[in-house]
Length: 397
Image 1 (cartoon, rainbow, N blue to C red):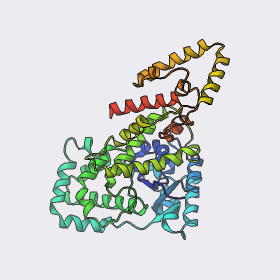
Image 2 (image 1 turned 30 degrees about the vertical axis):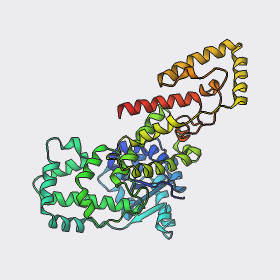
Image 3 (image 1 turned 90 degrees about the vertical axis):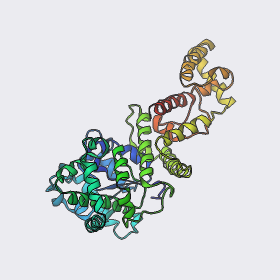
Image 4 (image 1 turned 135 degrees about the vertical axis):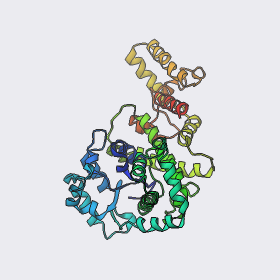
């Protein structure tokens, strides 16, 4: 239950799309903290985490939960809620309630399920809007612009339209929600949120002065040089990388987090955020992909003579002739050419078998990417395939 890279997501704000990314957020985080998750949406078609797996992840502290008491313990209130996703699912919610009560006496940062205090955003928002009369006009004009739905979260724009005749009421509602959202992140013990829609980042920029004026105190975690909007950009970007690494595979995230891959990925994310923060880049967009590409380009597949000869013998035995080995080698060179590697620099007799993936090879780059994509450590062919994936990501970012 040690914190390595604690993240937060207000997951139900994103509906089924949020739960389709749940397995990637779990893989990236240690731990992942979810605000009032919907057990009904855990069962949605695109969610790769099963109900039993979700409960097991909460039990072991890989996933943590924070929410209001009525949400975490009130079955009748949940079932009577107008939102369909609020419905109580006994397999998940009975277990979550039991864990909340069991952990209630532990220090807050050690609890697997935390019952949050009542919200304070209403009082703060009214005072803030009254002290800043220009805020109501700014939010009203910006959120009701004809193209607002292209730049801001859909729910926020819908709220603005419902309050179009009441600019003051709109400003109080928007600032209240922003305050409560930030307070939830801070109470989760993190300053590293997942924002799964780029429009969220634009909305954060609109409310920067509101957030700067609030009394929400974020913990000093991750990189102090980065705002939580920047951190959200980085964490969101790594989800894109993981989506491309999956390449249609549907492996269990529970198995991944119990293995070496998760032990490598979460520290890599923490280190990446800290190191990117120290660069003082004007924009963090694209930095995760660039960081991973740089590590791939500077990494090495080292030679191991006993493994090379052993592999060559096994290949000759399976193909019958050294010509069979040569044919296999030549066919694989096209993969290397596709990613710009100087295939001609490698001799068949010294290391090429490893670089083509016919033998395991010591590798100095990030192994988590191989373990996530293939469930196995680096080899030449796997490196070529991942390098091509990163090249494609870099060209389309």
